[in-house]
Amino acid sequence: MASVPAEKLSETEITEEEREQTDGFNLLIDALKLNDVETIYGVPGIPITDFGRMAQAQGIRVVAFRHEQNAGNAAAIAGYLTKKPGICLTVSAPGFLNGLTALANATTNCFPMILISGSSEREIVDLQQGDYEEMDQLAIAKPLCKAAFRILNAEDIGIGIARAIRAAVSGRPGGVYLDLPAKLFGQVMDAEAGKNSIFKITDPAPAQIPAPEAVERALETLKGAKRPLVILGKGAAYAQADEEIRAFLEKSGIPFLPMSMAKGILPDTHPQCSGAARSLVLKESDVVMLIGARLNWLLSQGKGKPWGGRKNFIQVDIEPGEMDSNVEITAPLVGDIGSCIKKLLENMGEDWAAPPTDWTDAVKSKKETNIGKMAPRLANDNFPMDFHGALGVIRTVIKERPDAILVNEGANTLDLARGIIDMYQPRKRLDVGTWGVMGIGMGFSIAAAIETRKPVLAIEGDSAFGFSGMEIETICRYDLPVCVVIFNNSGIYRGTDTNEQSADPAWTRFVSNSRYDKMIEAFGGTGFHATTPAELKKAINSAMDSGKPTLVNAAIDPAAGSESGRIGNLNPQSKLRKK
Ligand code: ADP
Ligand code: MG
Image (cartoon, rainbow, N blue to C red; front, side):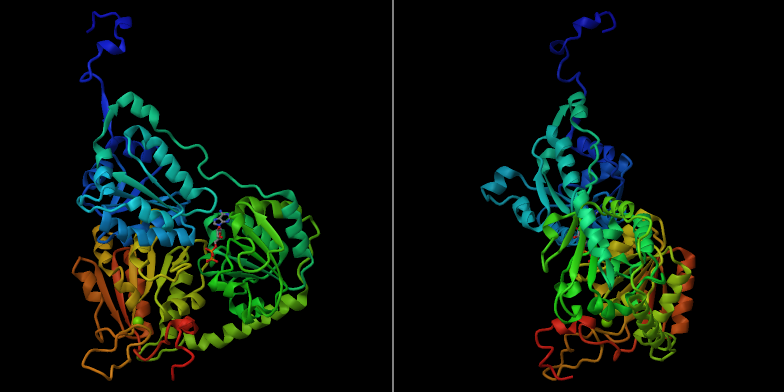
């Protein structure tokens, strides 16, 4: 070949075998890497096992779970924490369906994630001829996520990945489904053409600058307020505009109320935080500014008794269609939260007047009363241990370890922990979100540890833990600094229900006095058993000091806890049932 002049090496003279080839596997991996995908969460199987192997060989971290729903939850929270889509990889039909719950939940919560599932061959699926794990996955995913795509040809991989990433992170973030039929992985094409077909996406989540009139209107509305309130939602935490939000709130002097996952954007101990005066501020405020929070069931749809009466709403949100979804929004401010808050700050002027002191004083005094009432309950040393005694301990643990990530799910364990445990830093509280879904615990914990490299403390109801408990093996396998604390009251809501009809236990009961701490020992982790607040404190501190996989079984009084936690009012029979 050396003697052939360069100009003779035209395309026709190079045989197919001499040309360098690439395939679907490599193009997918290259496209993901080019777009900064560092980690894939998934479960191996047909047809994606080799894809996972090859991704791992090429430097992507591939974290294997025991169930796709947990891998999906991990991907979803990775997206929330990083503003990049979390990737979940599953097999076809059943694996895809298992991941779909997490994808729908991510979409509901506005977390960017991409569920990538292998699928059967189109020709067979479309004629319903009974392929291995046959299912029209794209059609099923479509109504449950923000966008759904299928890539049929290797040369479309670059565009397919770009469409998926953009759909997940731009505008209101959400879940995206990407369907990859088995045949795609092995498809070959010219390496040079393949290389040219993939690219790094330019500005996948463009800033959305609010209109100047909308900024003005919002500020005018706020200025006219006598009893203003700001509600921070998890959209505000997601936006990572922490400094701007703090500057805006401190300059305005307005009391703020953080929604559950917005706790810590400003510390819960901040003088303007009115979490401990929630009922008062919702009821008595006259102008409410929502920042990345929706007026859904968690805020009583913005109307009715908790809200006192009509008030003016300002809403800062990236999704224009969110405005007026439940009540009239008199000052909609559409844009990304970082840009919106920056504009508000710029236009507030030097002489912004603080809210009237009769309002801020009323909030402050209510707050102090409520905090004072709670204090002795949190310091209780009851045996058997109750929720308050146990949570009082955990509250101190987080105060002393403010950079730890708190994952929280359950009924009473969730509702009480949310109110009791103060958060000090943004995006440190990860919980059941908009749906109040159970089962996020271990997936969220694993991804939080991997994405942030911070210690994780998961506070789990015994029932909630059961949904993803097998993943403690995953936690041990990857040697993650996760401490799982199980609030073990031997049942759902309580462990004291009885069944009068048969020998079967009441259907809200679990095995009494279970020792969940023994489970983690099976996988080489360390278990602790705590029956008093003092023991609990010691156990959690040594668990967290170890930086190793640990599980604390916290024995809680089976009689403690109320039906459905704080949302018993949503039970259809709640008004009829006798106590
Ligand atoms: P919470 O449950 O904490 O009240 P929600 O999930 O109800 O929070 O609301 C989050 C809101 O934040 C959604 O309406 C979503 O459109 C919005 N959002 C998410 N990310 C951004 C962003 N970067 N800029 C503006 N709004 C955002
Ligand atoms: Mg329980």
